[in-house]
Length: 301
Image 1 (cartoon, rainbow, N blue to C red):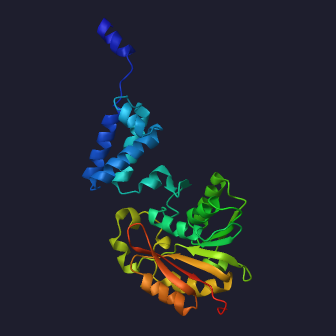
Image 2 (image 1 turned 135 degrees about the horizontal axis):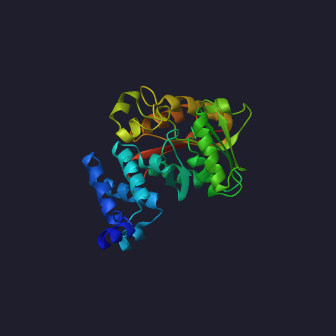
Image 3 (image 1 turned 90 degrees about the vertical axis):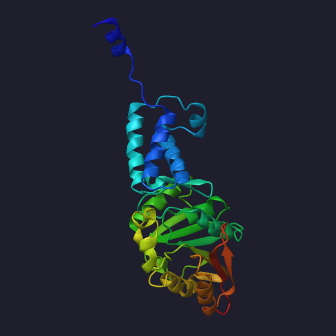
């Protein structure tokens, strides 16, 4: 072996740099039709996820070589994202209300719009309330309410046993297992007849069946259909929840529902017809109607 060959054999193989690998990821995602701004963010977040780094690494150590094993994993994850698998399902987590939740394909990915729902409910919490979260999914709504209140306890229900397993793990991660319980059942079927709550909250399926095919591929092809489909008019679950909630609210208790941007009038009418008072619709950060709330009247039975 000559001197040059010996030198090459003894030198470690240099991997692609952090910045180069990021650029490769962006290019692949853009070619597959993901908008450039989103592609840049997703490519960076995937790289941070694989390498255990932060934005600071990208800005200050962009020429640092990435381990060959990490490079292979990153390319695999970018390929998954290029097939329009949601980023949160790939990384297995989603930040919501300043907390990190486990998510997978058994639950909806918590969205910022739903933070408006949590914030509105929080305005009514003084401490010690009992909260019922219908269609709980990952448990993000109930657990956020418990995290940011004192002595509040809650029940989360869902028809999916796999979703409830995710919610239970999230409660354990946040140290809230003693204040939250999880029950499987179709809406109020999981609640005892005599049980009463101070607040009932839900982000139910509300998308009209006919438009599900028009949703972004990340949603229609990956998120659980049972958590999306609200029936022919999108109101199927509201028509069940609103009247049945009366039996499980204390007098003066409140019902909070997340809605689609064009459903405020219809859901408000359902609440008023059922006898709730101070029914109001609340807009999200984008200016769209997003929440309808109402108070149980002493006259409701």
